[in-house]
Structure formats: C-alpha cells, structure tokens
Length: 156
Image (cartoon, rainbow, N blue to C red; front, side):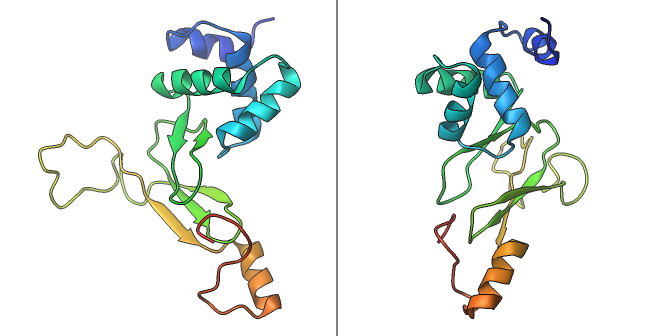
C-alpha cells in the first residue's frame, strides 16, 4: 500500500523501508520528540525495530532534509518534521514543552550576525526560554518566586 511518505522518501533519494515509515509516522503524530520516545512509539507498529535502527533512520531523515534535529540546552536532541522554513522554538523551563514560533523577521535566515566571519549563513536557530501557561499557573498556585523552576523539566 502506497503512502504519502513513500514519494517523499524516494524524492529525497531514500529507499522506502518499514523502519523509516514507522519513524515518520511517529514524527507526524509527535513533533519535538526525542529518539527514545520515537523508538518506543515506533515499536508499537514495528515491534522488531531497534533503538540503533531508529537512530540510523533519524540520521538519514535529517540528512535528506525530511526531518530536523533541534538541541535545546540541558535536554536531549528533539526531532520534528517541520523543515525548510527556518522557524524557531519556545521551550518551557518548567516542563520542557516545546512550541514552534515562526521566523522572527523576514526570509531565512531571518537573523543576520553582526560579523559572519566568512561564513555563508543559511540558517539561524533561536530558542526562546520561559514558562508555558500551565507552569505559570502552577507557579502562581504554589507561590514560587519568579526565578524558581517548576518540576524536573528542561533547565530545572
């Protein structure tokens, strides 16, 4: 049975394999997810897929431009399918929730360094840090100060 992913994989020069389809399916349902979570979810549809195979698939997908790897400080690398638009991310210091935010200004790269040091810049990655709405509510309900992290999330 042909899937929408089949054409995208072939166009990117990748073979259509069950592990790749499983990982793409997980990424479609769970943006901003780490490799261990992807492996666990992929095993639900492909029980014999190994963590090593998932890492190989993620490397192939990011290399082909079908997936993007982001690395928020203090947390594991996360993967998403939203590629090619140079968008940025909001990360909650409390629970680690990650949300997309469109490019701040203009076309990619939407930020220009004051000195590119000879680099031909084609992408800018910005991570905005703060507390999500749920963590703000929890903080106010528990009387935490403005500099106190909530829970065990990223940066806590």
